[in-house]
Amino acid sequence: MPPSKPYSFVRYKTAEEAKEAYVTLNGKEIVDDLGQKIILYLNFVEKAQWKELGLQALPPGLMVVEEIISSEDEKILLESVNWTEDIDNHNGQKCLKHRRVKHFGYEFHYENNNVDKDKPLPGGLPDIWDSILEKWLKEGFIKHKPDQLTVNQYEPGHGIPAHIDTHSAFEDEIVSLSLGSEIVMDFKHPDGVTVPVMLPRRSLLVMTGESRYLWTHGITPRKFDTVQASKGHRSGIITSDVGDLTLSKRGIRTSFTFRKVRQTPCNCSYPLVCDSQMKETPPSFPESAREASQLEREYVHRVYEEIAEHFSSTRHTPWPRVVDFLKALPSGSLVADVGCGNGKYLGINKELYMVGCDRSQNLVGICRERHLEALVGDALAVPLRSGSWDACISIAVTHHLSTAERRVAALQELVRLLRPGGMALIYVWAMEQEYKKKKSKYLRENRLRQGKEEEIHSDAAEPESLGEQVPDAGDQDAPCRVSAATDVRAGGGSASKVTDAKLPVHTNRTSFRSQDLLVPWHRKGNPGRDEPVGATESRAPGPVFHRYYHVFCAGELEEACRTLSHVRVLQSYYDQGNWCVVLQKV
Image (cartoon, rainbow, N blue to C red; front, side):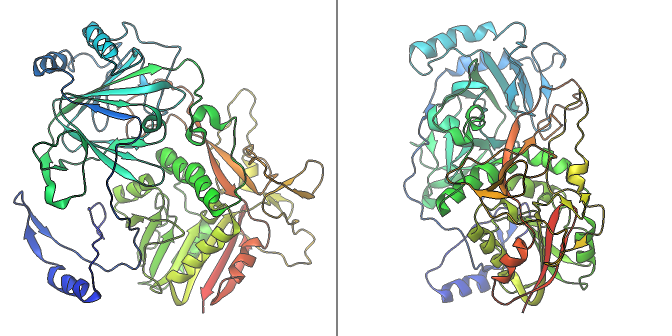
């Protein structure tokens, strides 16, 4: 489908009706309710996530209070915000890329979603809020008196990315007042359930418990919202009843978000997504498909959504042997990049037609900003047609799957996409970071500089050489094998089985001591989408995220490929800390 355009999945009762709809509607020009001309594009799909929409409920712990203040008070509160004063004033006013923002009490740092608890802003919260907050406390709408306020002004078409307010930064209660215009805010559960919630003008949103700690919330950037047409329906869930939906044009909305800064570590009931508790309770090695899926959701998918901007800024140099593979393909080849990240390979060879696919919506968004063809999809269920692709690449993807079965399934998906004779190039991170007595770039860049913090945005290193052929079994330099869920003990090369063990946290730029581990990513305070324009002041250290990896031993990737049907391994090699395979569908 065209990038950056909305689309829907439509299901018909019979194949004949689907074909008739395609013939009748594909390419047809229509005029919508707003008088805009729209061309309909249709396509058949082989796979689509489909869930029957039942009656949805508000996320647990979420409350919307309508008409919390009068229209007169709304006018006074909006006029109390001085947007014209010097942006360097002590109230922390910023000109963000997508909106205007002011901070009171503490400045909210968007680069790490946190506040500096040791640097409160002078003046505290404006006096005008004292009586209002006391009233809300007395009436039971809030339980804590907040000490931090962020004021955001949104123009129509602007939004805010989906996020969870940092657990360790703020107490349970997050409260937001909407003035000037109504808005639809999207709440999303880690399982993928999305609940659009209408926040009417002059309404108060209160997030506690699960809705505050587990569900992300965000505003999609658009100029119109789909809302309930019923006059009696105002706040709450936007239902899926197509007969009761209409479009509502957005106006200028100003939100006042109140928080209470947390002074002690968070001990909520959601340790897998809690930054206070994750360090204390690392996850265990998965023992079932369900546990594997949950581990990847929390320690791969969620992390890449959080670090997408910073991750992309460190991923700009294509790896030479991947470039060689792409440039050797015939002109006009169809190529799928499964796990395309920020799309750094999608434009390498202009003679190819390349489509990228990645699990991270934010990374796919970066691809689309660069006018690259990319879509959101899972490596275990790639939303592309079978048997249609001349080549596929999967670079630094398979090592994020946490069981052998899931890794083989991801390889099988690549084979499914290929036409007979089509080839796939696969790269995975290697257990052996020292090979033929030569350290990988990953180890060589271990800068143990005195008095200087080490950068820890680790990943498969950028290769400098053309790589090495994989040794045969008789090569004395071939590294020893370590099976999954094992731990290499200090002082020897032997490996012992780990039973019900917590996944170890890897020390960056050092040799691996376990095949299954968590690798830290230190998100620096680099400018991102919501970074203040022209900001140069020093930043508080960014948060550390942990990504799950299974690093591959020599021969393990080849062995997995040979379990696939209709596949021939053409080549395997070691390239700067990665094991690599070129396979062909036969």
